[in-house]
Length: 140
Ligand code: GDP
Image (cartoon, rainbow, N blue to C red; front, top):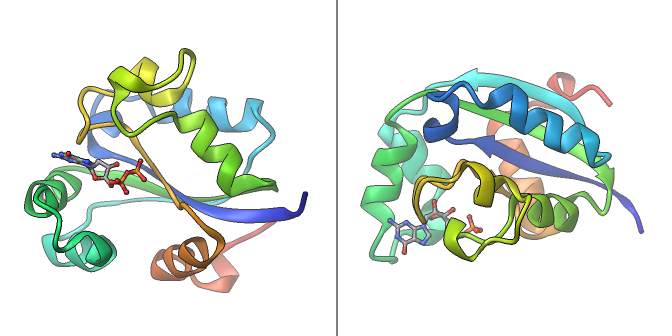
């Protein structure tokens, strides 16, 4: 297994319920190091650009409006097999289908307001990390 970096976002439904610390503890307890982190408010335009690959999906407008509806915490997680590991810790997209003890099962409110985002491949991770962070903001 290789050491990888992945982009994580703590979504507005979770920041608004003050779950940032509890979600970060899940990452750290699972061996994922938070090597960059900032709390921001996305504009609708930024959310649309970030989710560009989903533009044709029926939920695109709703998803972008939701992501711009409140603060988010964008972060880079680093560790062995970090991309797959993080997706395991997050759980399935729909909290109702997520395994027990995953973030989405424990904290998610709906298929849209599911508390966290995580990159799904090496290529996506590289693009998503560069979308929010410059090299000097990532400190391993
Ligand atoms: P992920 O990789 O598990 O985050 O899932 P996707 O890449 O398929 O979808 C991106 C995000 O869009 C999800 O995390 C949800 O916030 C949202 N989403 C996915 N499916 C739906 C849906 O059917 N309806 C709505 N409203 N949002 C969805």
